Image (cartoon, rainbow, N blue to C red; front, side, top):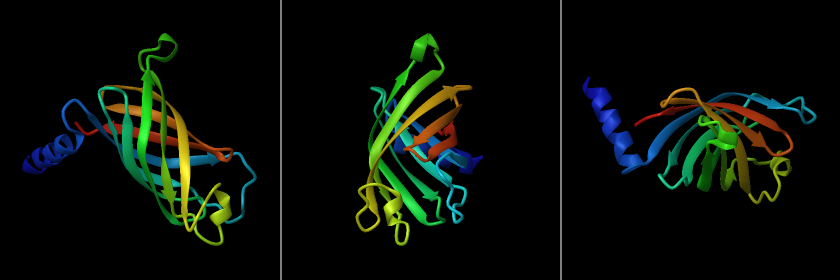
Length: 153
């Protein structure tokens, strides 16, 4: 209907010519580092834009391991497709700033200053269809995040 056409027009406007705009959802993370009794499951929702040249940028909201509302703004990133000759397999990286790790957990991320910390997140993704993909993000030395991506355009 009309709402679908409006949503698609907004997505195309944000994506721009030749870009792919993806909704990112992560309902589950696994931490292999020593668990803190206060650790909570991390939930993430975000938007990633992939440019035709393989550049990636975006923003994500997440509830961090300690239940604090957090943001990840990543103006830098890239995707490398057809890894090991597997057309649907890709390696990705994003870099930016995380905000939200506040007292008493500010020391849980390196270089944190008043809740702001730099971040680099490598990932492996697999495309199940042109619209849907799965992704595993490496969370430093603490664990991994399982993510589903859906193309909006």
